[in-house]
Image (tube, rainbow, N blue to C red; front, side):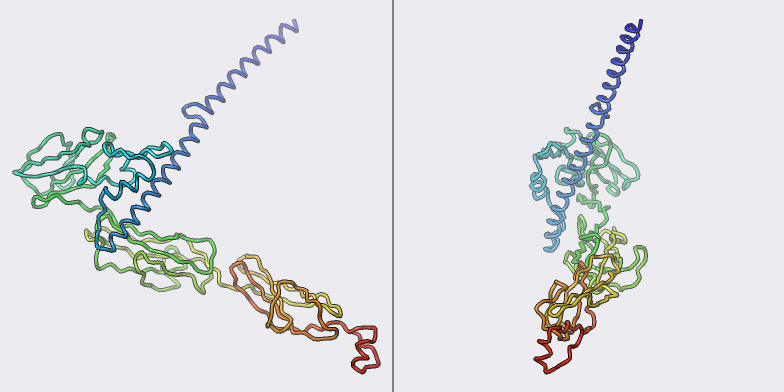
Length: 392
């Protein structure tokens, strides 16, 4: 009977283990399993990193061109930048990276519809020709400046030119291109994108000062009457403790010199020629430390006839490690050791100490006198013509 019960218990145990093993495998390897989700997370991270890298290079190229008065960047320039990451299919506008990550062009930037479609409005007929319609995209148009949109399938008769706009959507209905409008028979872009202000680096942990670059960019053209100014403030919400200062767009400048504490860069709004604005931009926190260690205490902790040992302690208000340098000649020469050897017996020295924090901020103490011990064997006193020994 006991054997029968044991056998049944063993079978039940095996069944439970099988079920648990299957559950663990599903949780680990299934569609929503741990490994699957981890892989998705890694792919998403790689995707974002690749998109960011491409955009930095595109914006850098855009800035270079804007210096020469060119405010557009054609796909003939953008595609080689994208292809640094892998293979770009110009028919469906999709990048497949060398790691196998798939990225659509519209995930990187707006599709420039003017480069992939021919749009005409003649004799009250709107015509849109693009191969993208055959590759998963659809064209929308409006006759009332965007209040309502219809799906373009063939040439359409529109009596009034005013308000005609065209754009591209993907299969899920997401807007993936810029918007083009008809003006006096010409096709031009509807500029609804705001200028972008970037601050680099955007905040820093701890430094005496830092070089910062503020860059204002726009898909088209920035207005000529912009005021390029920043305010280094002790508050992230208001401008306080500083003043408005002019900067040159895209050129590095230094902030933080002689300052200690947390600061934020406030940047005035920038406008483009269409009236779009970047809005107010505030950086992450910059923490500066230009304060030397304080409360430096110096004393002689040990002395012999030929040596002095100096003790020093200081406080750094910002929690940095403090190191020390020592001088026995009133600051003319310095050493890192707190012990002075090979000194002359019975001689007084002027000792100073420097307290230095991690960033190099330093405080130098006032001089203290330290005298080596007088000898007790009479040699010193005889050389000085002294008959009675003197104790240190």
